Length: 279
Image (cartoon, rainbow, N blue to C red):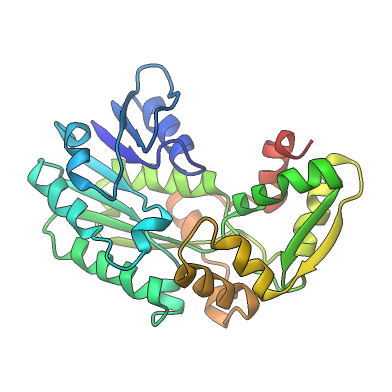
């Protein structure tokens, strides 16, 4: 049995589906009650209170660990989850980390994530670490404004990064959970092209067949919006990257193709699959 945390999100949902299609028993964990595919067990648990994960981990062989924003906050103890998993008999953990651990190692949220990666390495378990850059699905934050105003608002409109499709992250995670060859692997996950927010808005407009205006936010405006959902330190770390990505953050990683045997999906493909959210 494999436990998937964040199972109702943009990565966890397709990962849960991929594992069930591979014939695995899956326990889906999310903070609140949620619909899951037939045959999947659901456990509601808050990762900020690791003891609540015990029922989900009972009998599990592997764990996909995805941390919500509050587990990056000062005082959070996500490493306790690794200890609980090991005590429960879990043999493998795949951790969804961040590209910034390598490219911006001194950012406060990156320091905390590096410490979690190190705790996983030192646990004695089989492990793999996934380090994605920006997510294509972050564009869902624009869905309401596109639907109601035909507009996208974002900072740094002409600064791009190679955003990755969460479905690719999920497929790589499934491979790491199921295939011993990926034990000890650290994979940087990006899309196939650098794309700016303005170009993303144009891709949405093309898929809709109607114009989408672009409005450029200031950094302060963008931070105010982000801190409604994530700690200020994480918002600042993210804004530092998208304001001025360094050469490592602009690099197109070969790791999706290395693991899956195909090129990563482009942003336009993500839009085509999710266009209903913008109509």
